[in-house]
Image 1 (cartoon, rainbow, N blue to C red):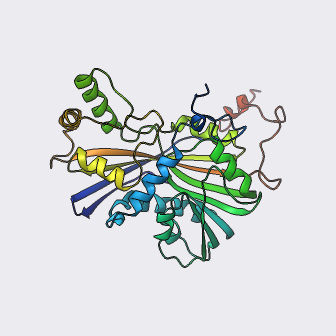
Image 2: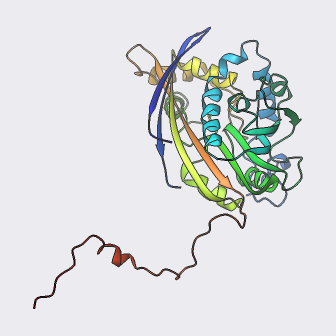
Length: 340
């Protein structure tokens, strides 16, 4: 993916949203509440998020009459995930879309690329509103942490705009992939919504003498490669996009997050946000565009990982090199002629 930028103006009932994106490539203790313990038996992963709350959020968002107006970010990211799928020069007989929602990725794919597609999501309401596609699809209501598929089933697993990813989920994906299968996905990164986060923290500290996490914690790009490696993936690739959306005000930012079904669902979230704190945050969250808009940055992390197979290229064994790096500096230098 080459560096670039794009600007889009998205009309809505509340006004408009302007989307600007820039791209860059990078090298690749137990709680007393049993529901807040480990994510899955033996995984060693602490359950930070309330999965039942996330399910309710997504079902509520899908039930909105104008829910399609909040799909702009998912549609944009899904098209970029599809671009990465097309970069793989092969046809996938059977693919799985995890957290498919309304099947945003399938609309960007052809049946020549993917012959059959399974859609999974924890939200039944979202799956019922899936978009039409030329690819034969099958819907499965399931939690991505406990995929109901046999090992070595799928040739391709995709996921678009995940807000949460950890080793337990990646291990499930790795398990259902066939050897030499590929996982291509996207998720929000650690710098997402830093403008909103800073405004709320400063406002709450000034008005209430301290702050609470009102935005979900996200994965840092520096940790993503380690997570993929721990899950067993090889030949890893990580890309980063910064997508900036301009909104009329802070309330529109929070309203759209609710409409996306991506409100904070961490166990330690504080459900109440005082009116005075919101007004103070709105005053801090200003100075965006010259038209009076305010920016909201979404850091999108794209990941590609392959399930190991004997046909894949492997690094040479340590100590097997026949040329020293010191000799590389001599390449291109004129040879010295001997004086008679």
